[in-house]
Every structure is written in C-alpha cells, then in structure tokens.
Length: 137
Ligand SMILES: [Zn+2]
Ligand SMILES: [Zn+2]
Ligand SMILES: [Zn+2]
Image 1: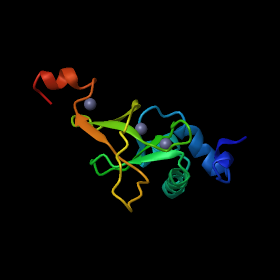
Image 2: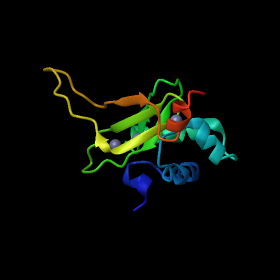
Image 3: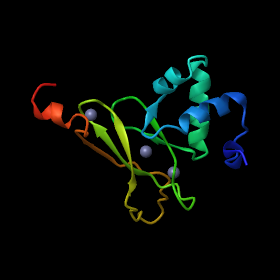
Image 4: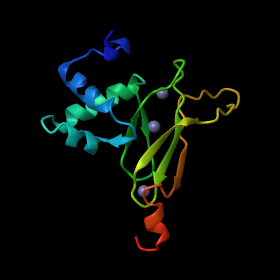
C-alpha cells in the first residue's frame, strides 16, 4: 500500500514528489531545504504538503529556537508518535535527530493530556567540535 494513503493522505502528484524527497532525509530539514530539492515546485505547495504530513504523524515538527521550523521523518515504532531527542548546534545551526534517544515520558497532572513533546539539547556538533576548540568561529 502507498505510504501516504496508509496514513489517510490522498496521494496527489505534488504530495508524492515532496514525500519522495522527505523520506530520504536523515536529519531535520526546513521548508527552504525542500525548496532547493524541488526547484520546479512552488513554496506554498511544498509547505502545505509538509503541514499535511505532520498532521498525519508522518513528520515531527521541531522548534529548535533558530526561528526556522524544522521537520524530520517519523520513524516511531509501535505506532507511538513519541518524539526523539534533537540536538541543535549553536555553531552551524544544524539540528540532528538522535533517533535512539527517546524523550522520557512524563506523567501529566490529572486532567492534562500530552500530545507531543519536544526535547532539544543545544551545544556543539561533531563537525564543529574542532573548529570551535581552536577558538575562531
Ligand atoms: Zn513519530
Ligand atoms: Zn555544528
Ligand atoms: Zn528527528
């Protein structure tokens, strides 16, 4: 079965084209990254497709504090859409997916229902580690 229709999304040509690029992403990506990969497609079509994928839990949406919304492909197991930890590099701005590091589940106070969680660690990534250690940015 088509991955999109399996998630209740009507697989239009635009959505299929966006999904094809999206599913190849190993780390987080932004709308601008997708625009670059899909130069023939207009920005709002891409944005609408991403929003739809997120609504249908195919993507996680991450606000990493850079002011640019990031997305990553949901690879959650057991149908539990629990997010994994992300790492934002303060030097290069890249946000990485730590898929093996799940966000600890927190018991909510009575009457509150958790729907999504975000857990972002900020620091210096492996690629920037040496550059930053040398002292010049
Ligand atoms: Zn998920
Ligand atoms: Zn970095
Ligand atoms: Zn991620």
